[in-house]
Image (cartoon, rainbow, N blue to C red; front, side, top):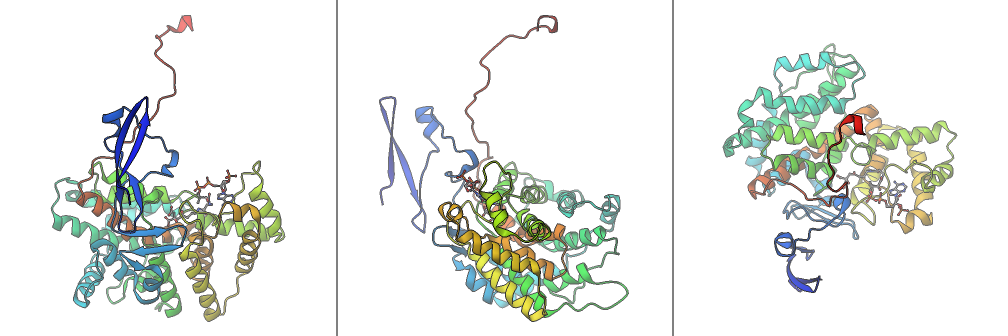
Length: 428
Ligand code: SDX
């Protein structure tokens, strides 16, 4: 492995160091490029640019590999739990029994949100999109815990903020749903584990007992594991960018929620179901929509297909597809959307346009179908994505702080007017 790269420019030669990671990925370190050569690099969408080094998640887009702290996603999805994976991502190692119990108990004991926050929900219009609600209420947590806003907060205060956020976000998310359907909110129960507690707050009613179906609990726990982190994606990079200014964790995560909302990112799971419904209501001709997706003059995209990194299958999509089949069979649910999704996948994977561009189903393609079978409404799908991604965002924010990374401030190449003089309005 060479550890330098040579750049020849304007009859000068620059030796640039090459960084090699633990999986033998290599990057040219350009941190001194501008000082030495007055050159910068340009990379719209950062398709070829590494923002940081990280020890949290490894992806291999060609081989369809995803590992959290070195553990394959397939093993974690099968053997671990969401709270255990959250601990692994944030603290770097699988917890021992006592550590996991303490982590779970700490989270359980912080699930209540301040009673004054209920008034926020009442102020939103009935059809407020829950992503807009949870993004703003998450940021508002910082106003109830002003000590979290101090840049020089102690390690203990950072840990307390992390536990508060993990605990309270599930309540904030469930209450956003309750508010959207006009139901009374359900308070968390300390006797329930994280996923059961969330489902209790989502679907429980004050008028009757609610016992979450273990099939749904297991499927949701697995879904949350699959969404827990994904290295430097759009929303995680946003969390790191905002956190690099020493903004508090609540504000940084709120910014990540907003970035996730976009239909090209986490909003795709809602857009997939809306697309499948459009195909179903249009008569179910999947080839017609494949042709629309290929037509450059048609803005239609096959939502849930394609990925910036995975140029082969998205390992999460394969696991979700299996979990979807199993859960629907166990619940005895047949969903016409699943049939359309499978026909769409089959048609796209045999179409040269998709094959040439290496466009495969991604994590969002099947997740919406599972959420529907759980009774979760379409507009809550991206909130579910945020619920899963929260420990990854926190881990990445913590790593960025721990590495004392500088404030993120990219450069640009200016292409606007060169200097010109102000003209009085009478002379324009
Ligand atoms: C997530 O980064 C992450 O890790 C994200 C994520 C995570 O866990 O955090 O994995 C979660 O966001 C998954 C992606 C969900 N988004 C969607 O499903 C929306 C549909 N997919 C796309 O819009 C697109 O594929 C992206 C945004 C996911 C990736 O876009 P890129 O890498 O910028 O690729 P591109 O838009 O430049 O597309 C390359 C080519 C183009 O055609 P050409 O100009 O070469 O002719 O592929 C085409 C695109 O038009 N293309 C599609 C397509 N996706 C790409 N054509 C039709 N349908 C699609 N879905």
